[in-house]
Figure 1: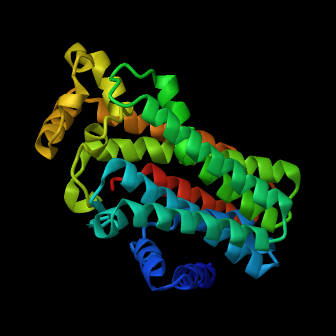
Figure 2: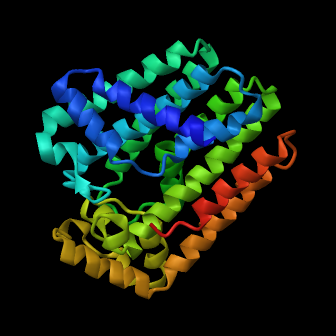
Length: 311
């Protein structure tokens, strides 16, 4: 597995470098910023030891990471975010036009990669996930600044914006291994479940911090007008929070103060418990599948790492 991940990393670097000095530099900057590479890891683990076509597996893993990187670049444009993982964003370095073009480049390279795999099912899986990302972003923009967002609506956003790409990652791996339909579906459900949990915990971390671990100020979502699970739960315990005018939160200091009020209600552990339940339910999807023992254990470890996230 380390060799496959290294090959994916090398492929990502090569793809970024192959588009001229300007866009290539920005794309390379985005990829070099790193991250956990969780989605490529899921592709590889979902494929397991039966994936005989190594180039196709590497291309699939690279494609999902390129999609993820593209969404981050575009999110930073929409949020006017100056930092991502503690380093300056493409938007901060090159402006809106270059950042949009960089994101578009990463999207286009992702689909070139997945097309080269030669599987219509793989192309469709990535296409569905990408469409869901766009739909989720539109929902989030519609819900901006509204502290009365319903829990079901929030969870739908989590599924669309985050979980569907986790789902596609597992689908692509299972397809690369040419697994039976039931296995593809079961692994997809596993990915979708841990993807929702991942987003829930990401939103908890945005409130809990600290910046030294996350690379950004607490309350970044609140500054953007994005209502997430901690505020949804906290407004039930502290009705005054339901009346907060999010448009009045305009500085990092104000956002951190609101984070303190949310945390004081005790909802952060409740939110983490909900995410943990989702991880357990997702892991249960693996039980009936005829997976290699090492593969099953590795996927379970990934699920555990999602549940244990603190940054």
